[in-house]
Length: 434
Image (tube, rainbow, N blue to C red; front, side, top):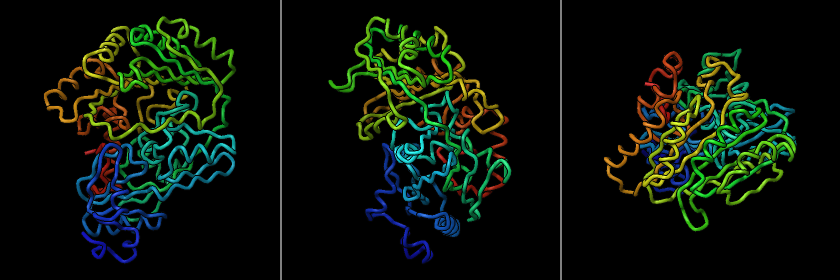
């Protein structure tokens, strides 16, 4: 396809292979896509024109906001929303461009003393994170990102710009809060932000020998923690001399330094504590740097949102973290405000979960299929008891993954909405509903 194959009103922001604009738009996190055309609109009207042109040309559409969650797009069209990154604040109401990054959001909210449940790193895009639910910092305090969404501006397959909400097409509004990018191109989200908390952040590092005890102590602390506490626990293999193997607790308290120390006492008392940093921080400080995307390895990833971490589960997680295959383990505490939303209120239904468990094995770049399958079997032995898969963190695709993301009734309802608003299957998402 060439630009001359597209309507004149679309060609100014359409880019085909061999141009810098194409290469930049087609670049995804840890992958390069190969669509027939990259479209980089800057307004909802241009998005509508792009969708209409793609439908007329018979091209399926994939959408890129931050570029972290999407798999490579082998053909069709890729709509890159990077130019739609405005963040407009009016009181506590915030309109977020779907192409904004969370570092931009944090910067825009700071003068107003506001926060929104965000991604873990500043470079994560608003669109993908939000459509998948939005597990991130402050999830126990304010719920998922989608729990703060009040309206969504979206271009559907018929090329119409719509605003959906609890009052306007509530079924589509429900589906787009956790159902991914299956229903259209979201251009903006209207979000109700919350007052910025007074945060104390603890970053604790441990020797590998402390792994099993650390897992148990962290889970005991977070199982009884109030909503004002948010935390992750990572167990990392040795990556470089600057990043040795061991456990890393990142815990944030909306409260005083004294309250933080009281909460942390069981963790600070563990043998193997390598270092500690406990200090005040801002919302923007929570957003970490983007991990490198050019590590020459094959990532084999699995995750589950779980209702409990039993001693047997912790044994299995520790064994994987300390096993022969280098594996990054990440646990995030859920519960709190996350769990007070009804399972049927949004398409993200696993509200009874108390933790998200993520396993990332690092195999050689040209790892054989047998090795990948063996790792997945090891992961499944630990993860199967979980309540479901969090799609935003799943690198694996397929109908079996989609089925694990949603309870049967939720998946049936999502498919019904998809059939109504996109009967021809124009939009291809990372986790398709068919």
